[in-house]
Image (cartoon, rainbow, N blue to C red; front, top):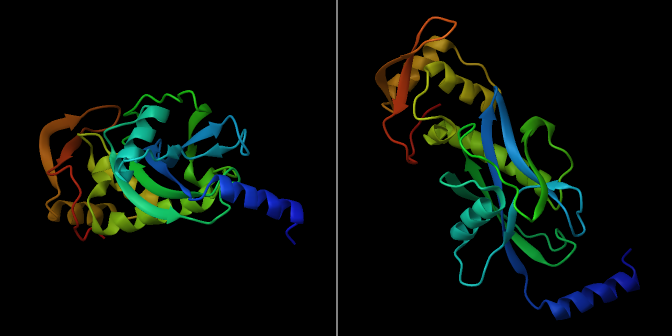
Length: 232
C-alpha cells in the first residue's frame, strides 16, 4: 500500500515537473572472441549509484531523437559512425525514481575493436559484458537488453545488417560465427556458404588470410548500408 508520505512526495514532484522528460538509451552490441557482448556504464550518482546501465541521457530542446542518441553515445563513450536503429519506447511512470522520464531506446552495432572507449565524466566505469551474463541493471535496462537482443536476432534473418559486426575484409567462417553466436544455432558449413554466396551480398577479394592453418579466402560486402533481404 502506498503511504501518505510517498503520495505527498509524488504530488510535489508532479508540481515541479509538469511534463515527462525524454531520454535516449543505447544498447550497443559487438562480437568478441566468439561472444556477443554489450556495452555498460557504471552510474556514479543518484538513486542507482554503483549500478550498471546502458549509456544514455536527456534529449535537448529542439534536438531530433536520432541526433540525441548519436551525441550521447559519442559524448559518453567515444563511439561514433555505427549502425543505429530506434528500438522501443519505455514509458513506465516510475522507471526512474528521480523524475518521470520516458526513454526511447536504440540498438547499435560495431565491429570488435573498432572504437577506443572513453567513459566521460558522467560514469564511473565503462566495459563490455557478455549478453548472457549481465548483472542486475539500473532502471528497466534488463528488459531493454532482452528487447534489443530479440530485435537483433530477428533482423539477421531478413536484413544485411550483419555487415556492421564485421571489418571490411573477413572470411566466410567469421561470417558464419556471427550468425551462430547471435542466434545460438549451428549451421552446416557447406549449406551456409552456398546460401550466403547465392544472395549476392558478398564479393570475393583477391586476397587470402594466412596463419597457422591453411589460407582462407577473404570477402567483402557488396553494400555496407541497410537493406531487406531474405537471409535465413
